Amino acid sequence: MKSAPPPQEARRTDGVWITLADGRRLIDGTASWWTACHGYNHPHIRTAVEAQLGAMPHIMLGGLVHASVLVLARRLAGVLPGDLDHVFFSESGSVSVEIAMKMALQFWINQGESARRRFVSFSNAYHGDTFAAMSVCDPEEGMHAMFRGVLPEQLVLDLPDSPNGARALELALARHAPELAALIVEPLVQAAGGMKFHSPDVLASVVELARRHGLLVIFDEIATGFGRTGTMFACEQAGIVPDIITLSKALTGGTLPLAATVARRHVFERFLSDDPDKELMHGPTFAGNPLGCAAANASLDLFAREPRLEQVAAIEARLADGLADLRGCRGVSDVRVKGAIGVVELDRQPDLDQLRMRFVEEGVWVRPFRNVVYLMPAFVIAEAELDELIRAVGTVVSEVG
Ligand code: PLP
Image (cartoon, rainbow, N blue to C red):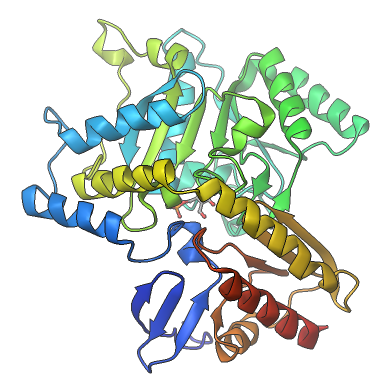
């Protein structure tokens, strides 16, 4: 608060454009932390939310239910792979991770295996800011290093990038298996922990090892879900159906806070009992908020009727082409693209406030973190708008070098 420059005041958003209070207009390269996949203020989502607002903005889900949440649960089960068909709604990504972790722990407790209480996660992981979610973030790079000793100690390992790495992972899993409940990973793209990519093969090998040692597999698709990596869900590219998946961000097309933790049938069945103690004890006040569900249903309509995945493929090609020249540029250590994600990694952390201001001067909203400058625009971005973002990244990055 003391040293940060005051934030820019946004007045209006439309498509990929943000209008500031002083009248300047910026092309958004981040889709508001990767949520606004259809662009801002989409008329179809707005109309659906307005209709829901007129009928019932909110109702508690304890003992009551409503059509929007029932439809959404069914539709999510329909678009998710395999038998991921039991949906638990909450209101933020971090909370959906808390619920996934609680679900995994209780999955074991409900069958008398209460020793399985730790989690495996990975370096560069970011799963949220609440306490259980913080414990599975990268302990150094995950923004929460000061809480070491307070957070539960999880087994944080490296994603294998060689046969030696795979052997190290296998040894660690074999040694700790009896105390491990689940493995949690952001499939294909570790986002807020550094925009690091791994291949579907690496993901498949990690999951195979986890399953060999009896662990549940949780995929955190809060950032990757809903088309961002080129398929509706990143897990599809590795042909894996995780036991539990978490979704948020683009779930409502970036209009309202909503999240979901979705479990496979065999997980659900461990909670289905005449014994009330077997029930999952979690009840967020705003679980399944009707406005959020109406927005999410409208967002799924758009995925069904608009060529979103083709748009992501076109963005991927243009980012790969447009950012390629930065490879080898002074100060740039890596350039990588996956789906609608373009990353320019710098060899050191620049002055982030200054960089952000330079981007505003260039007419774009790009928000670098650590040593990473990235673009994750709305899928509806026009070619000329994307070219403008790429141009601005090229200009500003070449000044840093
Ligand atoms: N998991 C992943 C992969 C994320 O990228 C994020 C947020 O960036 C979260 C969890 C936390 O979500 P939220 O900020 O909605 O709590």
